[in-house]
Image (cartoon, rainbow, N blue to C red; front, side):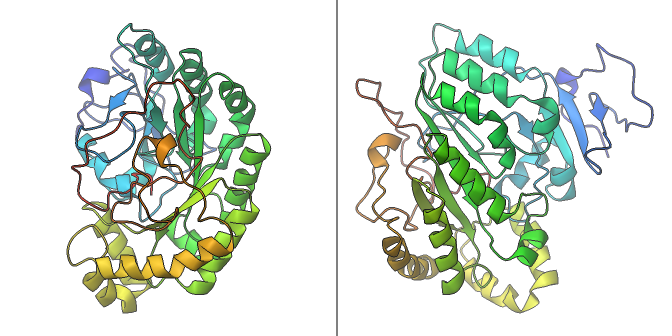
Amino acid sequence: MTGVRWDAQRLDAEEPATLPGMPTMRGLLRSVQVPEFPGLTFHEVRSRSALNEVPGDSRMPFRWTINPYRGCSHSCVYCYARSTHQWLELDAGRDFDTQVVVKTNLVDVLRRELARPSWQREHVALGTNTDPYQRAEGRYRLMPGVISALARSGTPFSILTKGTLLRRDLPLLAAAAGDVPVGLGVSLAIWDEELHTSLEPGVPGPRARLELVRAITDAGLTCGVFLAPVMPGLTDRLADLDAALRAVAEAGATGVTVVPLHLRPGVREWFSAWLGREHPQLVPRYQQLYRRGAAVAPEYRSWLAGRVAPLLARYGLDRQVGGAARGVDGGTAPAGIPGDGDSDFPAGSLPATRPGARPAHVRRPAAPAGEQLALL
């Protein structure tokens, strides 16, 4: 492995001692490997900033994000964020799964940024790049400090996760919701256990995540579910979709959005290699459906919408509308239907606008159709 772009954030300049047996590389800060997380390397950095501004042409209904970690031990083959690891001169495949960057001073930096007179207390989103409740969070416990800092500053926030570790922070989240609007989202993609193990080996199982949805709503908080990503020929059978949406409704989800698979460069190569190994008969179909680029062909999107619509109606999930609360146009389509832009969020996943509050930040609608959450 060659040097990476982290010289300005090195910890080893202040703490020159290197743990015995730990990997070293030119320009790399302190690296840690621990027995409870075999196969993972945590690279501890000092972050210069905590709040990241979303590009102005994004269709995301928030302006600011926080990413405590880069890389993700969930190891989802389909993860949209894989290409971001290439900016660290690490690869989008195995390195993304096993080389996790930890912003150890994140909470202190965030407190300073939130205390600035210029801070407008706009909605901050977590989990839109890599999961804040991945395995590293069990060791570093950054999220309690992040939640407390946002709540004490009067900043509304949302969290999207696949990690059941969020249950640890439910009391803190419930208390925060008394001070600021809070939205919570859980992502579910696969119901077949064998497929789940193959495609998302580091993620808690689907039943565990359903229990998380129930725990969130039992705590008096809202929870939107992303049925995402739906993968052609793998997770789009009528029986699978029916079982998934029925289970989501029974778990008490506030709303649901169905999102088809998105294949941008970085993830496209990794997913295509997996598909060729595990389901080679589907390769021609995927080449056809994704012939235009990252977004699935419009005809598939229309087909999926037609398949999902009666199921949403059957389980009462088509009546959840979140447009006004999200600060984006709700549109005329029933909630949960895959639209031309995959940036639709289910009700409950983003903080609601309270009476008298500042309007939510509205992004300029200039991004390509089919934008998908980075976590998926």
